Amino acid sequence: MRKADLQKNHQWFEGVLDRYRDFSGRLLRARRNVRRQDKKEIVEATALKLCAYWESFVDQELLDCVNINSSKLAEWLDVKPTNLNIEMSRAILFREGYLDFKSVGALKAFAKRVLAQDVNPFRLIQPSTAIKIDELFVIRNYLVHRSFAAKRSLRKMYRRNYRMRYFREPGTFLVAHGGRRLDTYRRALVDASQRMAQII
Image (tube, rainbow, N blue to C red; front, side):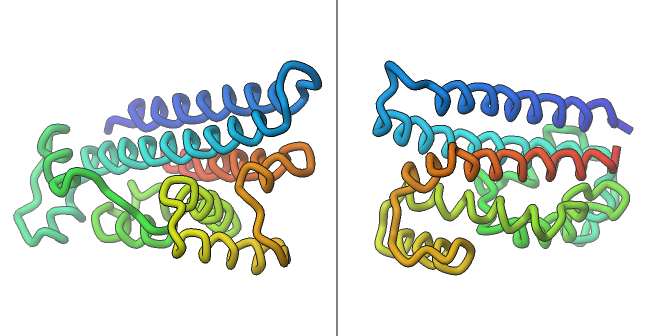
């Protein structure tokens, strides 16, 4: 088993999250030289980066888990079980170019289809953690697309989860309360990684 590879994934990802905790903490505490509007812009960029690193982590985790045990993937593809090398695992998983999950629930459903139970770390992500990660991606979608549909989804999330009656730009939302919301999302990613690491 390539358990060391899974451990390496988690160490890398959690190291990135620690760096962003330190960076955003310094940014939000800065009283001079960084205007409030600049903080909002930088915090929005940070949210985008956190999402990008999560997606990269998920891709690598899926790839390594399939590489460790490809029996469930073989069953899903209706082929004879075989030990796949890393290149073949990548070719099968990413045949469409990249994986795009609309939610943590969609990610967990996909992982259940292609990963054997004993090497499926995604099943360990808690529902409360999944909600926060999904919220972060609603923010990301608005920042990336700024479409009517993305704005409507963000407004709905604000209303449902934060009882906010008025729309706020993500930077304003994330900087409020000393940046605690941004840190809540970062901590949700840490929690997902730490719970997933229990499979190692």
